[in-house]
Structures are given as C-alpha cells and as structure tokens.
Image (cartoon, rainbow, N blue to C red; front, side, top):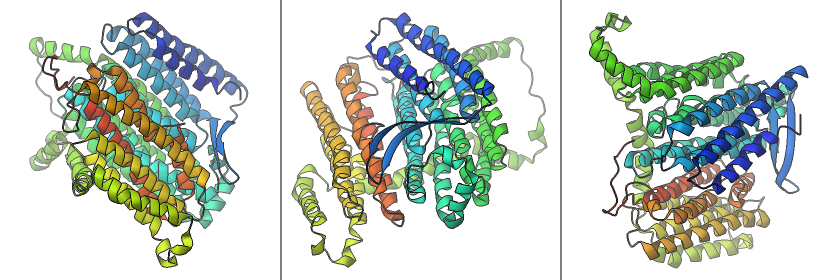
Length: 622
C-alpha cells in the first residue's frame, strides 16, 4: 500500500504536464486525457479502498522524501491514508470524473477549452495532495494549488470585467485564510520542535501531555486552523465570496464551490480533530461559528435572484451545520454529511440552466399562487427586517471592506512618498547598513537589538502595502515587492537562530522570479505604451505568452509550493521564536499582502476588457 499512494499524485501531475503540450485545437485529445486520467484514478481508488478495507482499514503513513533538511530542521513530504481520506478520495474522484465528461460537450468550441481542462487537472492534483497530506506543510502545498486554480477558473471569461474582479476578491479571502495556516505551522514547529505529522496527532497520550503544559499555545494553533477553514469554506464572516465565485463556467462552479473546494475547510477540521477535540473553548467557538453561518445563510438563500447564488448560500448553510456536528464530536456524521451535500450541490448546479428554463415556462402556463409558510406567523416588522438583511447578505461584504481592505488601502495611500528614486537613495543604503550590523551586532546597543526585527519587518510591510495600493507604475510596485523580501530576510537575520544558508535559499527564489518578472514587464512595454495599474488592460488577448511568463514569475515571487521562495518562507518562520508573536504576525501579513499585490498586478495588466477600442468589448458579467 505504501508504494501505491504516491501514484494518486503522480498520475494527475503527469496528465497536467501532458495537457499543456496538447494543442488547443485538439479538443477531443484534451477531454479524453482528462476524463481518462480521472477514470483510471477512480478504478485505482475503488480497488485500493477495497484492498485497504480487506486488510482491516489500517492507518497508512508514507514519508515520501525530504525536500530540504539541516541538523535542526527538516521539510519533508508526507502522505497519510485513513477513513477520512478514503471518503474524500472516492467522492472527489467520482465528481471530477462526472464533471470532465459533462464539460467535454458543455464547453465545446469555447475559446478557453484547453485552459479549462488544464486548470481542472491542476485543481485535481492539488485536491489529491491535500487529502493525502501527512503534515501541515504538505497540506499547504495543495492548499495553495487550490487557491491559484480557483482564481484561474473564476477568471475563465478573462475578457470580462466582473469575473476578473470577483476572482481577485476570492483570492483575497483565500490569502486571509493562508495567514491562519502559516501561523499554525509556525507555532507547531515550536510546540513539537519538528514538522509534526498527522499520524502523531492520533496519539492521544502524546497530544494530551504536550497540551497540558502548553494549553494557550494549543488554543492559538486551533484558532488559526479554524480561521483557515472558515475562509476556505465561506463561513461567517467570509460567506459573500462564494456567490461571487460563480462567475466561472457552470462545471467549475459545480466542482469547486458546490462540492470539493468549498469542503476543504471541513477536511482541515476533520484531519486536525484529535488535536482540538479536548479543547472545550475551541469547540464552543467552532459550534457558534457554524450555527451563526447556518442561521444567516439559510434565509439569504431564499431571497437570491440568481439560481447559482441560491445554491451557494444553501451549501453554506449545510457547511455551517457540518461545523456544528464537528463541535459536538460527531465527526463521522460530518463526513457523511459532506458526501451528501457535495453530490446534491453538484447535481443542482449542473441542472440549474435547465431548471431556470423550465421555471420560466411553468410561470406562463401553470401559475400557482404562493402558499402560506412559516414566515407568515412572524410579526411583520421582524419578517421585513430579516428580508432586508438577507437581501443585503447581512452587509458582510461591506463589513469586510470597512474593517479590512479600506484601512489597508488607506495605509498604502499614505505611503505615496515611496518612489523608485527614494527607495534607491534611502531604503537601499539602510538595508546595506542593516546587513553590516547583522555580522557586527556588538555595535548595536542591547536594548535596541531586540526591537530591530519588528522594525525591519514593518518596513517590509509598508512596501507591500504601497505595492498593493499603487495605481501608477507596474515597475515601482514590482521593485517594492522584491525589496520587501530583502527586508524580511534582514529582520529574521537579527534573531539568534539566524542561518545564512537559509536566507540565501529564500532570496535565491526571490531574485530569480523577480528578474524574470521585471524582464517580462520590459518586454511588454516594447509592444504596449499603455501599461499601468489604473484599470484592467486585457493584454493577455494579444500577448498570451508574455502573460504566462509573468504569471509564473508572480507565483515564484509569492512563494508558490516547491519553489525556493516557498521553502525559504517556511525556513524564515523556523527562525522566529515562540515569544515573537508581533514579528510573526507582521511577517505573515507581509507574505499575504505580497501575494495579493502580485495577483492584482497580473489581473490589471493582463486580464479584463481590452483597452484597445478595435477589440470587441465583452459584457461585464458572464
């Protein structure tokens, strides 16, 4: 069994690479490769699960390979298989197989036919990595793959304004959730003094002994995991992103936001269940979040004018109830509930266009007056209040803007004095002086030395905030993002656990991706004079190869999995000590805003309606 598990990741990875090489004109080859791969995976999954049950359903853990290791640190890829993985594997494989067959005809002659199947295979690879992950680091690799593939599928109609805008919104919420996983990994390193495997979490005595001496650290890790799950599964207060994600094609809405991706938060809570099940305060919070989500989403679903939005909020309400079941300790009921909700929402989304057609026809020929319902017994003032709140989606989106995005944008606008010349004239010399002081700490008073890491991290955060809000120069924003990584490296270098080789691994990925991205921007400027961040330009229409290279550079600079930047970011957090919560928060926020700024640059330069008037102007929405 140990040798079979890696095949579940290798097969979709190979198919994804092959799909990139197939011409976009060969629709049949692309579709056959996709549903053939998932079909083989399905047969393999059923056979493997049957053999696993025949053997007595043992827990299987495979430490595949070490990605990077030193005397005190080891970043390794670990795979894990148990009952939870078996259910998610079968459900995911069946639904992906159905969606690929359905999409073969649904998207026939669509311009983005190849892009769609490329992204579906990429998504399925990330899904398999998540459900087979044996530690948080491996899970985070698949977590990031799901985030990027989600962005690409929502922005599938990339010549339209609203799909691109909503794709950036959804990616922003995903990055907020990433903060939780990053901080959970950081504190787990200090709690266990290693990259803890999920297999060890099933050892009750070991977990109980550790948490009995570090109860507050355990609560912190659990709450950070919950934050990630809330963002991924669209729980309160992140619920409004799910209907916005329905701008993509119906098959992607079905597989992502009806069945699989939206239930990844449930999987995360199930996988870490042995860690937080004995923390009563955490279970109360989980139950309250799920209950509030269900109570708000259920009436909201009933007043939506779009059938996709109705299904989205109905799914959110059920996921809220699943979290209540988890809080009550009913994890097997929650697992069964996930499977039922996934199949139902996939079916509803796939037949939704036909349902709308039939409903319109029935209204004309078989009109039936509204029957009395339970709402009629509620006092009218309360009924109207609930109706207006549900219609406005409880103002959660405006709340997120007021409390999170608008303050960040205001801080970025206050940093308008940061230009390339000033960065080179002031910030760069200070960076050089800081690098000199790293190797000559005796020149720094001991009272100041402890504050330098946080101070340098704040400078890094200021740079990415400026890049995130800048609406003028692409090159300025790109340079600020690159410089922010150097400031993070400098901040960590003042810690006692500083390792020069670790920082070099981190900065090597930054420099390579930064250089490729900057060269790509310069090449685009040879063809286009209008390249800024004031609007969406849609240059992918005329320069698809340049757009692809720039996207790869953005992913490399943002720390996409397996890149040197990704490994370096994990190494960075191992050098942050457990009492440096402020430093860890600033650095994690820097990495999150860094990813948002990069995706924003890519979207505004290459996606959206084309700025040139001789191209056909697409509708705002799909």
